[in-house]
Amino acid sequence: MSKSSEGFKPLQGIFGRPAPPVQVVRMEFYSGGRAIIRPEATAIDLPVEKAVICFTEGFYPKLVKCLGLSDAERAPHISACHKGRLGKEVALYKSEVGAPAVAMAMEVMIASGVRRILMLGLAGSLSPSCPIGSAVIPTWGIREEGTSYHYLPSRVRPRPSAPFVKALRVGLSELGPMTGGVWSTDAPYMETVAKVREYARKGVLAVDMETTAMMAVAMRRKAEFAAVLTISDSVHGEDWDQAFGTRRLSRARDRVCERASSVMLG
Image 1: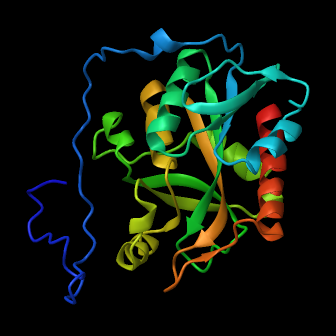
Image 2: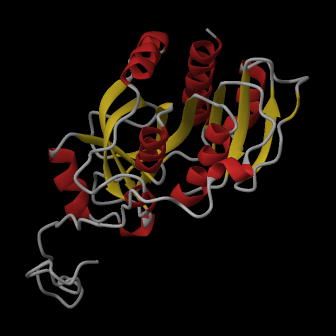
């Protein structure tokens, strides 16, 4: 946190005083210099140009089936991933949760020859217009995770690949996917009412922990990236509403997996 943020008092609101307005802290980690540890040094034998990344156990078996990987061999090990399958056209990996881990996984994949990466994950809704079960395709992001600042200057807004997003919108058209902003944070227990309201006013539809970092890695490495987020909970009310473990969410997640897999195999 920058000490130069004038008037920023993070403890206001804790002891009975009004909370301060939301202030986005600009982080300045970016460096265009030569890295000492280069991703090429960790490249693996991955003879495909497309990969799908998920994070939860609910997505993985459905994607194995939808991508035709039931009889496929195990994908080469990536340290930031729990497991994976390797098909003739696409690789599937289940990554650790969070921006640093999935950024490392992406680096290895891209260094190994992967050029198009799709992420399927869960997210919280910031708006009543984006109910639980909705599919969201992020088209830009607000960065509150730290990883992206190592890849892009603070002034750059992370975005996915526009042609990839277009293909997903067509492929998922039956689901009525929503497009708009995503807010990625390292601190899910600090998604405050003030932040939710402020970002919703700016057009942010959903909050997760990884998307903006993945956009940044892809932009820096000149790879195609897009994400489809299934809304699993909502944080726009006074209380948290969630559907984890419900049939409603499982059905919505499975529909996204089916349509998105068709796009990747098309």
